[in-house]
Image (cartoon, rainbow, N blue to C red; front, side, top):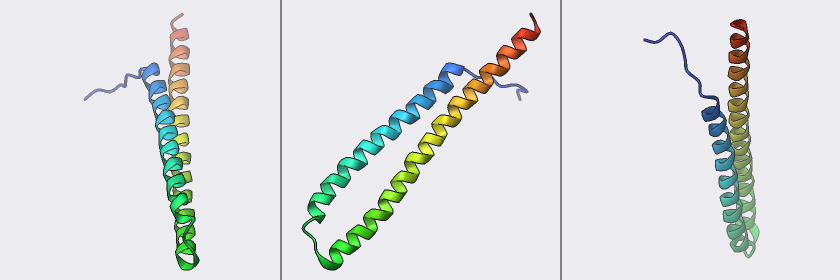
Length: 96
């Protein structure tokens, strides 16, 4: 078992960018889906409209949570890469 880790800064940064891109694609797809459903639901009335609105509000909240989580993951990856780079630079300076 190894007692060290190897970090590729560019790979970690790339992972962060991929998470951001995936979150953007998901957001775009969800907005398209919501637009399509809204067009259909606009003809509903009474309990059907109220039920749709309630479920749509839950969906929107969960989608916002997903976006927030993706943003937090991407930010954490960027911070980790920077922290590893800073530590490596400091260690390299110890050796002149």
